[in-house]
Image (cartoon, rainbow over all chains, first blue to last red; front, side, top):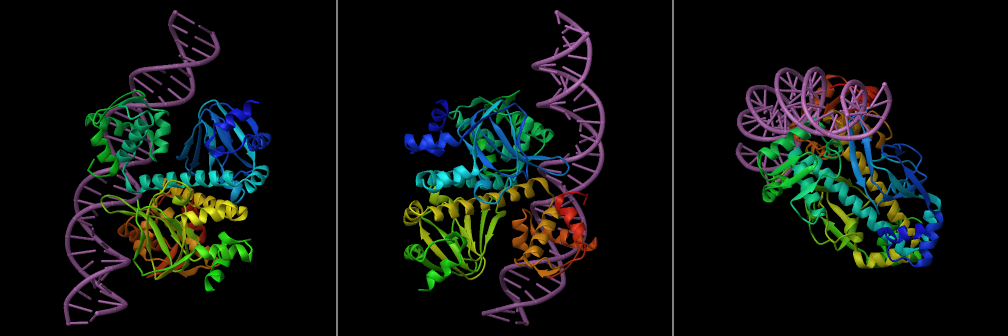
Length: 227
Length: 227
DNA sequence: CGCTGCGTTGAGCTTCTTCAACGATCGTGG
DNA sequence: CCACGATCGTTGAAGAAGCTCAACGCAGCG
C-alpha cells in the first residue's frame, strides 16, 4: 500500500511501529486539489486535519476589504489545520492549494483515538504544534518590529539557507504571494526589491535572486540600520 | 499540601485523578517574582515551563532599537513557555512579571515523563497549545489586516466581554503596555483613544472606559469603515 | 518638595498604501 | 502562427497612517 510509504516519511509519524503506521493508514483519505482550489474556509467546521504529500498549500486570513495575509505555506510532509482537532471546532483561517496538490486527510475522531493510546504520536504532535508556535512568534515579530525591507531580507536569507546557503536561487512563490506572506502589497514589495538591488545587496531578475552582500542583508534582517 | 489545591484549578490538569495530581505536584517548584522582574529572556535555555498561580506575566519580543511587542499576557491558571519543552531548547521570547507573581515551575524532563504515560494530560496540553495558536493567528490578523483604531476597538470589546458584556469597565493593564500589545506606541494609542472619544464611540478617563456605541466599535473592529 | 514614571499633545517626517497606467509573459482560440 | 486576454509585475504621483522627537502635565512616592 502506497499510503503507508508516504506516511513513513512524515515527521509526525516518526518512531511509530509498522503496525501503528498501518492503523494510521487505515483512517486516511487521499485527496487531490487543483491549483487555486480551496481546501477549507475560515469558520468552516473542522472535521479533521491534513498532511501535504505533494504540492503546497497556503493558509491565510482575509480582511473585509480584501487584503490577504498568508499565515503559513505548507509543503510535503507538513501537517496543517490541527487546531480544530484539539480545541474548538472551526478552522480559524482559509486554506488553498498553491499548486496541484495531494493531501492526506485525517478525520478528527479517529485521529484523537490513535493519539490517545499512542504516546509517541502525542509527543510528535506536541512538537509539531510547538514548532508552529515558534513560527508564529517570528511572524509576529517580523510584522510588528521590522519594516518591509527587513522582512524581505529575512525571507531571502531563509530561502538561501534552505538551499544550502548558496547565494543564487529562485523565489519559491510568486511575488504577489510573497507580498502577502510579508504583510505588504505587490507594489511595495516590488519597490523594495528595486531598492535592495540598487543598494547592491542583491540582484533580482524575475524569480532569480543573487545575494551580493550577505552581511548587509543580515543587518537589515536584524533591524540594525536605517533603510 | 496547598500546591495540589492550586493544581486542581488549572485547566491543563482537568480530568486527572488525585493520584496523578500528586505526581504532578511532586515536580513543581513554587516561585515568586516581584513586579517588573524578568522570568526568562529570549534565547535562554528552556529548562521547563510555568503556570501562573497569581499575578500576571507578559511574554514579549524586543527589536534591536528597543520597540517591544507583547505576544501574550498570562493570568492565573494559564501555562506558558511550553514551546521549549517539546521542540528545541530555547525560549523564543522574553517573559516578565507584570505584578507581584506566584508561578509554578515544571522541569522539562519530569514533565515529559508525566505526559508520556498520561494521555489525558497530553490531550489537555494539545488543547492548550492549539488555543495558543488560535490566539496567535488573531494577533497576526490584527497586526496585519487592521489599523490601530480597529485593534483598539477589538481589545475594548474583548475586555467588555470578559467583564460580562457591560459597557463600563477599567483597562486591566497600563496604557503603555496596551500600546505594546496592540503593536503600536503610547503616543499613537493616546491619539486613537482621543479620536474614538471624539467620535463618541467611547468615553475614556484614566483607566476607566465607557462604551457609548457598541455597534460603531464592532464596525471598527471588523475593519469595515474608514477612520 | 522634587523626582520619576506615565500619559498627553504638537510638529514634522518616514513608510507604506492607494490609484492609475503600462509592460511583459503565457496560454488559448481563431 | 499570430492575436488576444488574463495574470503578474513594475512604476509614478499623491495621500494616509503611524512614528520620532520634544515638551509638558499630572500623580504617586520617597
